[in-house]
Image (tube, rainbow over all chains, first blue to last red; front, side, top):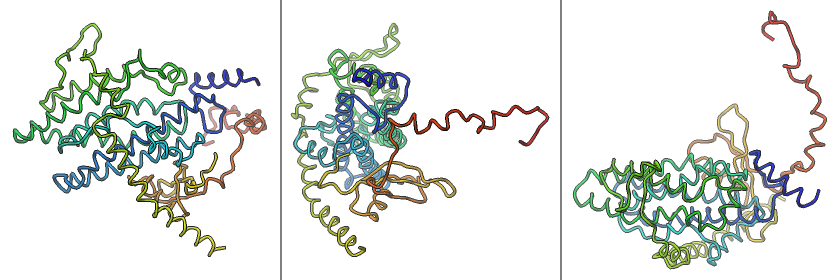
Length: 311
Length: 97
């Protein structure tokens, strides 16, 4: 078979909804796109533990603390599912971790925003996890088998994350005036960064067309963002709060809510590393990695010793 | 898959979700040895009571058939439709069969 035949064969499989598995032939660009996307996704789960980890010791009750711990532990798990999926494409864990620490690999910019109050735990669960879920539900049907399977597992676990966040906000929204204000303030701060999570507009998104053709993605950034807005407009009413966008209104003709323009300058600025917490997040990851060095070495030495004894 | 010099070995994890069912592949993880692989698998793959038993197999010990040879490998089974019960056309009166 010629290269063109291989490529056609591959695209025919994708078009016929046959999953691509690690040992199947795939175009090099498909493999590279997946490595970039899955590792970026994995890094987001791992870095995403930091803004919430910030509040574990200060959760307002034992119930909230236990829930937050479980959620952060899930995120570690989700990172591991995703790293494993990426490794099936021939990239080592070490390489991915190095790329994160050197700043070569990206993670979701949303985690470069600070968590200033307890209400932020609610807003992250409701908005940030809500936005992530829309993307992840779509990815359950992605064309690469190991990625799709990891996403199914993640989606099953993720829905509690969103619900617990909404519950935090609901509790605050029924509280004192100060608690209500705290709730509204968190929504105000997290709304726009959450909309940015879906990425650049379709007209600006460089990888989108090819990813759609390969069925890595099945919905465009703007489609997912619109779904998210339509959902949140309804949900925020239950909280008796508002979304910080004066342009938000129902558009009868489109059957969707219109919304205001995202501050794209801010978006690109945070992507480029100038967000409020970019440095702090990467420093924390590097520190954790370096301080874990002796544990990794000790475990390896222990395993070697046992192997030698057994032999 | 190329192995990294510094990563712990990779293990494939199989979980029996309920007594009486098969162990099923759920994914992989890194661990220094088998005991750690099982402990990590407990944390990574059974946080919600998904399992009653865990198998950990070092990935390098798994041998797989080649996707490119699927045609010839499964060819002998291809034309033996008489192995399926629906191949046999029996009168409606025949029950319990």
